[in-house]
Length: 300
Image (cartoon, rainbow, N blue to C red; front, side, top):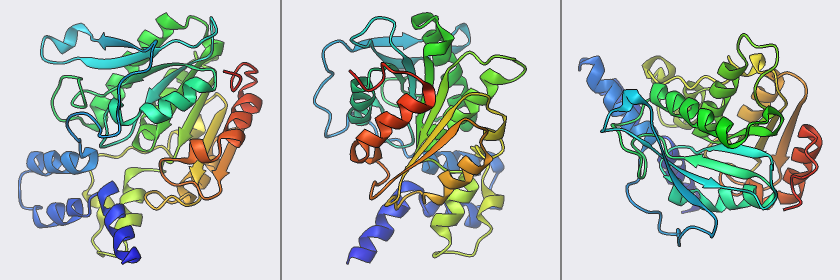
């Protein structure tokens, strides 16, 4: 019974149906295959998460846009200033399935550490308008949100990026692009949690016990953090729960090996895919304070 439940949960993280549909559908047009793949990778849950009970006081709704969006697209965001003026400010990038209403518990923990937080829903998630997301549109949305964050926090030494799960790949891509061709990147640090090396590795790990299909050859969405993290020029904190049944912690260990110093790998004993920040809250706060030399973090 327990084994069956674990297998079911893992399939929910990255649908094994993706593999079967791609394999059976190979004769079908590439556009249709990519559409189905994206549906199964992002697995967007419509509406409000059942555990969401409203926004805390002080959180402001925002709408981000660029002229290219026209009237049919927009990015919905939450802006939650810190209690202290000019606090470290963090861009929160979530993973697949749940929109911002399913992320509040983690955003609250980051805010309690002393961060001001700008959190976004990618186009197609939650109240953000747009078609089915893709790897490309997630990267675009993160860049647009970053531009807004630089207005909210003008000091590069107080700007951070945080990404959870699939959002970790978006965060790595953003940090890499911001530091490209610049002697001094316009941010102070990167935090990624419960994430993977690339989507093909994650899909292969989940699918290995179910199929021998060449999974990595069938995916058009790459989310390849391993090839980028070595080019990032700011301190990197990589956190992962040792009890994560969705994404094995060994992926974070590989990312850590590829990253440049200064860096920190924080393995939370017994933490799962979603609760590592809470389970290892003391270690998490201390790692942030020491790695990023931000003494205000963690003091609320």
